[in-house]
Length: 187
Image 1 (cartoon, rainbow, N blue to C red):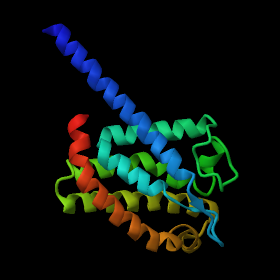
Image 2 (cartoon, rainbow, N blue to C red):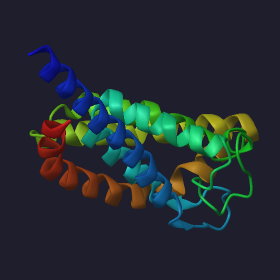
Image 3 (cartoon, rainbow, N blue to C red):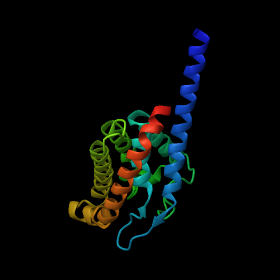
Image 4 (tube, rainbow, N blue to C red):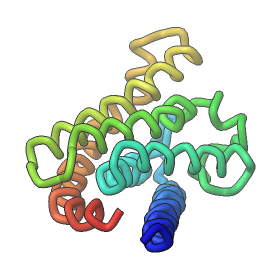
């Protein structure tokens, strides 16, 4: 009986570890879809959508761990960050997009915690909105540090992305309400 429990525990740990790695890879792939926006050092990417999906699908703890792994991969110099920003490794975290990146684990945790099991679309929508707000707050904080001006930080890092973020919010809510119950049941 104990042997069966140990094997079952190992199986669960292995599934969760694979999920964390796949989540980090998913965000890395989403980072490669980047569109530079004139007048701002921050490109439009699919990263925020991927972060929201990973947090919602994996849950608070595993989603945050996945984003921490993603950041560690980038800090180590792997090409996982958006290619349109010319900084590499640790330098990326102190550059204009660093605040967004550092907010990813917190945002993934929030989405996972608030959206619960993904069965109630209102909770999922609140979780996704909270995650998106946290990502923007991280980005604004970094841009405020770099520019010294809140208005300039908002103009560079929030306003150009609002319309696109509404679309990301809708996609994330639809995807998470459909997929989360099945994915979380397997973790």
